[in-house]
Amino acid sequence: MKVTSETKVGVLAAVAIAILIIGYSFLKGNDVFSSENEFYAKYDRVDGLATSKPIFVNGYQIGRVSQLTLLPSGQILAQFKIDPQYAVPKNTIARLESTDLLGGKAIIFELGNSKKYAIDGDTLTSNIQKDLLEQVQPVQKKAEQIIARLDSVLTSVNSTLSPAFQKNFERSFASITRTLETLEGTTKTVDGLVGTQSSRIAGIMGNLESISGNFKNNNAKITSIMNNLDKVTDEVAKANFAQTMTEANKAVADLQVIINKVNSGKGSLAQIINDPSMYNNLNNAASNLDKLMIDLRANPKRYVSFSVFGGKKD
Image 1: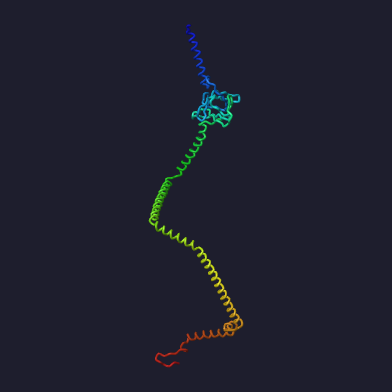
Image 2: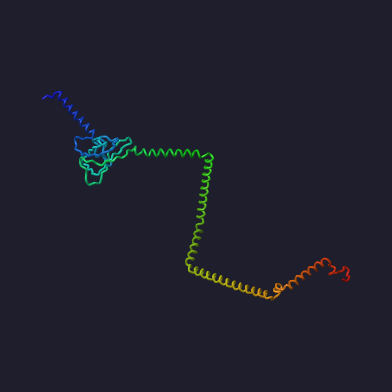
């Protein structure tokens, strides 16, 4: 039987059409040669998601997006085809996640911990994660604001720092450096002194420890001595106070006796105070003595007479 050219052309055309349909279906995410489980998820937005996009679990691809359908509510129904050898728990979350900076998306399955597994045709819980650009933009805006503020602050500081202030700052910094160098030298000197006198310091510390030990060992004796000293001090203070009070009382009594004698008119002092005639006599005697001294100054020859050649006195 001879096959005509028209038959060959028809067979080739049918094969080509079949290959085209199969290839188109595969590009859309449909595998006509294998039976796969179909799952669904609803999203409010699917920017960057398209058919044939992979589905990952911990970075490993287990399926692909086979179809996207716009629902009357405005949501997008995504159809997934998963290899039947992978069991998917019912509480698995199908997260729409960005895979690169250009906005490409993929579906990431966060496997749940349910003991029940989703079956063909089930709808999974969906979740949308912001893409990398959306996550970076707020940080970028904040960074730009911070840089702008920092630039204004640096400009203000630069305008505030005059040349004179800069010179003073440099001088202060140099002074601080010299002070630190001096302090370092002093520290080295002290370290050297401590190193050379370490034996003496050790001896002093040993003596102090010995003295402290002696105080500790004789604590009871020292306490007894201090108590005795306290008692002696108290007794001396009491004795001195008692003696002082006795002498004061005696002095007051003697003074009272003298006052009583004066009041009673006994003694010279009482007569001087109480007898006006004695006061008058003393006053007259003083007046006469004063007159005698005046006359002696005025007429000394009346009272004293002498001769150079040994003559007689008047």
